[in-house]
Length: 204
Image (tube, rainbow, N blue to C red; front, side, top):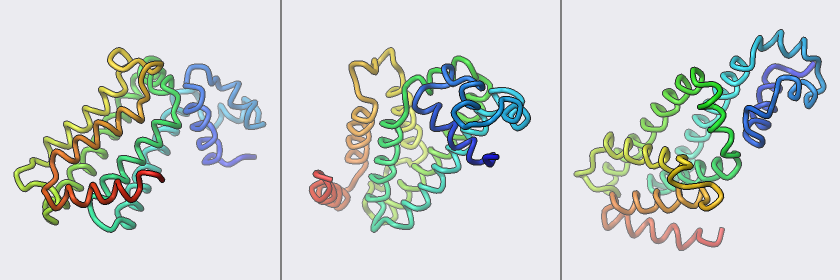
C-alpha cells in the first residue's frame, strides 16, 4: 500500500494541476490505485486531505527557503531567488487551486493562509533586515511594513477581478512587482548588485 506521505504528495500535485473541486476522493483513489475505503480510513473527509496537502506545501516552502539562504552569496541573491521560487510555484499551479480552496474549504483556507502569511512576512522582513545590515537596503526602510506591502502585492496578483488569468500571467505580474519593490528599497551598492545579477542571469 502507498505510504500516507506519498498519497499526500500525489494528491497535492493533482490539486495544483486540476484545482480542488474537480479532484474527488473517488478520483484520487483511482489515480493512486487504491481502494476508496483505504483512502477514507486515512482521511475521513476531503477537508482533512486538503489540510494535509497544504501542510506539506508549507513545509516544502520552508525547506526551500532555508536552502536558498544557505546557498546565496548575498542577501540580494537570497531575495531574488526567493522571488523566483514563488514565481515558479505560480507557474505550476492552476488558478482554480486557490479559488477552490477559498470557496469550498474556507476553514482550512483561513487556517493555512494565516500560517503562510506569517511565514512569508517573517522571511521577507528577515531578508530586509539582513540587507540593511549589509548596506544593500536603505537604513530607513521599515522591514515589517515592507514585508506586509509585498505580501499584499501577492494577494493583488491572485485577485482575478484585477488581473484576469486569461489576460495576465501571475508569474509575470509577480516578477514585475517584486523587481520594482526590491529596487525601491536598495542602496546604490544594492542597485549595482541587482543590475549585475540580472545581467548575468537574464538569459537563464
